[in-house]
Amino acid sequence: MIESPMTPLSPPADTRPDVIVINDVSKRFVIRKDNSLKERLVTLGRLGRRHREDFWALRNVTATIKAGTTIGLIGHNGSGKSTLLKVIGGIIDPTSGSVSRRGRIAALLELGAGFHPDLTGRENVFLNAAILGLSRKETEARFDDIASFSGIGDFIDTQVKFYSSGMYVRLAFAVAVHTDPDILLVDEVLAVGDEAFQRKCLDKIRSFQAEGRTIILVTHSLGQVAELCDRAILLNRGNVVFEGPAHEAVAQFRDILEERRIGDLSEENAGAPVEVPRVVATTVHARGKGVGERVEHGDDLIVTTTFHHPGLSPEWFGAVQIDNSAGQVVYGTSSRLLGMNLSRFTGEWTLQFTLKDVRLGTGKYFVNISMMDESGRHVADAPQAAAFDVLYYPRAVGTSYLEPEIVELGAAGASR
Image (cartoon, rainbow, N blue to C red; front, side, top):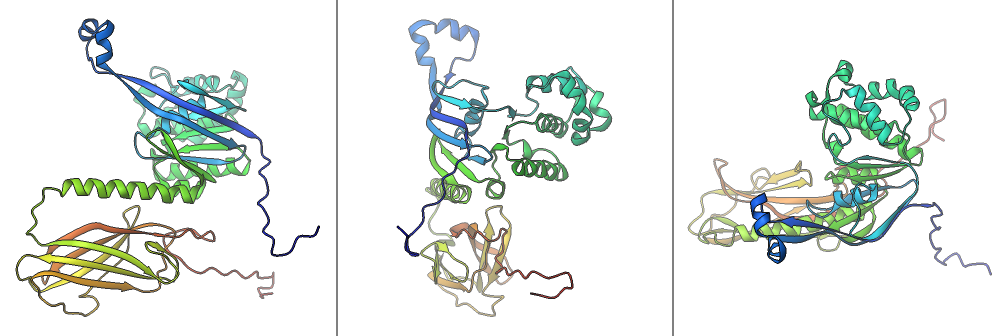
């Protein structure tokens, strides 16, 4: 039967083999509350149970990772990301469940892991390479490339206990990526080292991706996750709350972070005095194609803010500033810059900014509001008073949105 052109086609099945299968994994740690040997001897037996507590770092985690994919593990501190990476790497065993792996694994799990402080960098290269499965002959053949990639120069024959944190990471990363791993596990080490070396590491990861290797990355840089990863696993208190496309996982994680920030702010402000100048409330609404706080390119962004001043306000102006998730200012304006003189008031006064034809890149953005007097002194501020998301756009990346077009030019420079 010939299908109608209107019949939706199902996406092609991913035929790549599974290299890691995580099946119902849980991990428990025991936290002891007795701090000395004497206390432990006193609390032996039944009383000892009162002085320890079970902490479940992972609970019933199940996931399958295909060959040649790059997976991001994301979540706030203590969510179980590093524990899951160590379980995948076989560094620690799960309390329950199982992990199946195929291929050689190279792991960069923590600063200087696998290095002996009293050995030189050269000796540690051979030691670490042996741990990762290389023979001495193979390590000798690759040593010059490892030393060159690390860029630590003459320090290669210095004891690593005298290394800086950046030198540790340089050498450890150099060894790991030169062992030809099928699976590379990276835990936050890319945050250490100078910018040039970070770019070098990212270039190496991209070359691994082009070669079809599997990479699992733990990082707090959500920009790196969105840029490098095909998929992501979002963990919260040891549970998987989302597994899917990286940009969707990043958006959900930013929502979780925003909910926590608002909750913490509410607790801090619970006992604050009421009769002071302040920003009472701020709402953000998209007018156009977007719905509510979800903004699409070309929408108008409407920011409505209510200010409170207990007595007669001074001559004042209102300001709005938009920051991206990295804290960078992407836009700002004020009633003064717009040439508008605002009325003095007592009690509450509402101001509305309409920012037309929004052209921001994909991601979460935060709205900051300020009330200032004529001299520019801040009378009332509301940092991150509201937030909104710009929807995912698959044709470009960055903090600004530009409509892309491309024309192929022939050898003679004429369009065709």
